[in-house]
Image 1 (cartoon, rainbow, N blue to C red):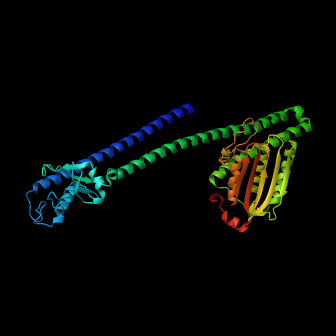
Image 2: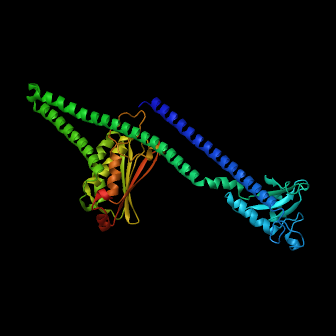
Length: 437
């Protein structure tokens, strides 16, 4: 898929997702407003119902009635208007309960003209009650006094929210899933696109790496078939040597690909044995001395570890050292300056391979150990490889119960530190099955 097409799809999908989120919040807001409106209607209905009950009880002047004379009840249970407070409370509770309104709430009676409170169920909330929008006129009972029956709810704002809380929670969870799904889809697509590009680079590299030795072998074979070459032992040996060298090169490339397959399947096996790491490093360094000297470079050894025997697979450990040295040489475009050092840290031995090459950026350091990942080298086009070396190094070091650390800065070089345990028995027992490491 083209980059432009991908951006268009992502933009359209993003706009659609944003639209869905906006609509959801719009409907949530409307749902809350509707709940508030329904709440207001229920309060109004309850207050009017209470007023109607009071009107019907106006002629009731018995001791337990809503309206009594000062002679039939204690004076402190009656309001100036003659309303029995003890009878008013159950009436209010009943009317509010019938429409689904429950505490906490405050109710009372006050004059709309003088703002004088005749009664408040909780006097501490007098100011709130006097300014409440939930009122019902008592003019049908007290025509000249302009009395009002009012109610105030401390949690009025939260009631609408609480009434649709579970629906809001479900909506929120679904929106989060939708957004995360969209983000994950984009991330997966970009990751697959990156992997696809890496595979394409890998195929291109492997095609080039195989094509060159095959073409060289083919040309050398043709030369050997010529009588003039066959008649000369020197020329025959020369072309036979070329065929042999290119065949070895081709074999190593095939082994690299096979190693990748084994690492992916986790079926590689390690043959543990006591290994003198210093001897192994010296051996690998000797084979690289000629290559480094051809570039007028230097390869220094600083092997100061006192304990340098590890329990490891000799072949894979040698490959780890060789891969790191090969990278240090390849990514030093000028005069290579490579240093191999060792030291002991706690119960581990650490060997470091440091160069003064092009270095690795912080962004690339996050991916450098991934399979088939290759750092873009700008104008440095002569660096060949499959992007398997560091992936192989990290996998095999971890299989030996060790770890890899990288310290690098663009333009100043890189330092790879490999830490391996010195506890031979523990290392062996933990890694009998490398694919489980």
